[in-house]
Length: 132
Image 1 (cartoon, one colour):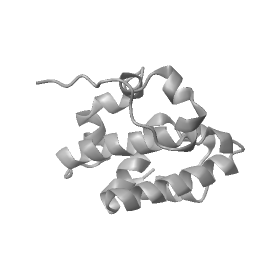
Image 2 (tube, helix red, strand yellow):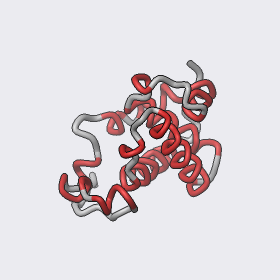
Image 3 (cartoon, rainbow, N blue to C red):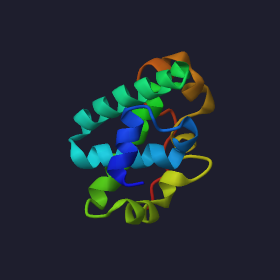
Image 4 (spheres, rainbow, N blue to C red):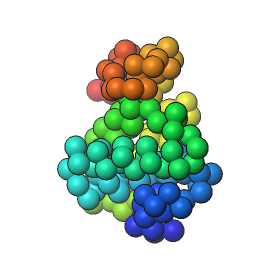
């Protein structure tokens, strides 16, 4: 499936929920960020993600902090390597696909599980280790 096909299927909610894996989330975020400035890409992604979740009977799964934080992480990596197509981007930034996810380095489980974090963006409560 091409990048455009994936985004069309996601936005139309015809993509099976089982196909919208973490990798697909990151790929769609990457696509939006390649096609629009951060705030516009974030707004489009968040709107489409809410609609997708609702169409799949999982409206309560939408999480504002996770959405904003992941978009920011993808945007940061994209800024460093804007010329890369999807497969090369993913291979260059394997930290985006680690388990446990980068979110566990930034946020405590309690903070991410809070209703506030689900409803509105909250800042990380952990220091991210940076390489010098």
